Image (cartoon, rainbow, N blue to C red; front, side, top):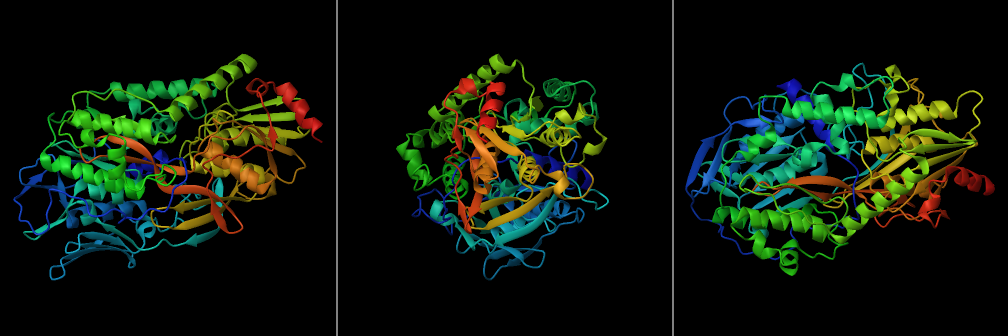
Length: 637
């Protein structure tokens, strides 16, 4: 169980990535009280069921019985007792803390005050008040943090030491950390129920999943037959996004087929990865998590689920969506009304509600990191796919630039090339294998699969004996983002000391951390690992396609001043993505409350609107004429 949970946590961390735009301060009790079917003090009939609970795999079950509760005959609206869910969360957090698989949370019930308290590590607490219908975190970010990681883990669990405690790849230096404010979630103002009755302390499963599991990129799916603990990313179309390729191949045990493969470029390696994934998905007689979930019975949502699902959705987005202010959203229930989505979200037909979610994220929010993953198990058909103006425009420009580059450079495989005295390092995403790879054992071909390997290879070429390189151009013009650790590694390679900052807009917590990279793989973090201080002229080529971490990196260059920007304004994106589900089981993605920022004069600044270049290249046709670009760079000096 411990081994399976450890692998599961590692994969969940891999699913995390840099993401979109400005996240304003969000108050958890912003709206006036919303009408609901649920009335305080009412007595309900409660039914208990024992269901299997799967941990990210159909081969891993929660040991022993896991009780789920239902009220008033609504068998599509599950509730969990806080003692049971506290034990589950405690086991998860204990394994995450590398302490074993015993629960790391103690649960205390005060029947007189009608409260439940979760205590972790002697000081991290959560209070559930059934009298006030409130959940309070004295330190929201601190409760879920891992003991050996920074307060807000910008590197998202990336291990900076190996199993022997020796340093690997990235060293974390000084950090500036500001704790978040006390967060109180007032459920009664949203019409979201909590129920203390018959010695039980019940909260709907979706509320617990959204505010305790979503920080881990997780949710719990329910389909009337079982519970499945996994990431909503797992239910994204084909699960073949750039970020999921490495994690899925790792899970199938096929990683050795990829790492160090001789004579294969990135494109060929990725094709092999997809082939192995498809074999793993289709070559087994056992059903997948997705198929198991979708096998649940179809039908209408109950009146209780319809009411709760609507109010819960508004509460989650009010608290966790990072771009309310940028979208001029005061509260989401009003936004549903203004956009015409409310009648469909309030329909008992799950296909109508799924379609409204798809339109909400893809047409109305349309912020670059919002996406629709999957329909509810209750729905027979998935909603028709639509796209907003912003997403359509980004896709069109990306396709256009890709074709322009193909015509100029052929079927370029991102990586390292040289034109005279100018080195070009092309990165179309930020990707890494995971924590278990020893890059020192890889051949030059084997290094070409992920961002860490490409940087290691490029560094060897640029600093080799007799190197002619005077200029280095980092081409991020088609970089759509990816993993924050890879971005930190690149920043340190080019700048030496690299700083990254995050602000959580739900709690107000802030952190800035400093990193150094070991690029020459000697386990020493020194000036031999960076391009800084070598007298090289450093540039970064950007376009409106440069998004998320592909936008954060140019912002860091701009703030530092050592790397000059070429091209046109970047595409923005400053929040980490947050995968979520609805109460009735729809999967989707939003820009979450963690905003990646840059700090100047002690203040945190939004990077969502993009960064202007130092030297404008007015025509996209000139981006990929590399001989002309090298001549232009030399003419600047």
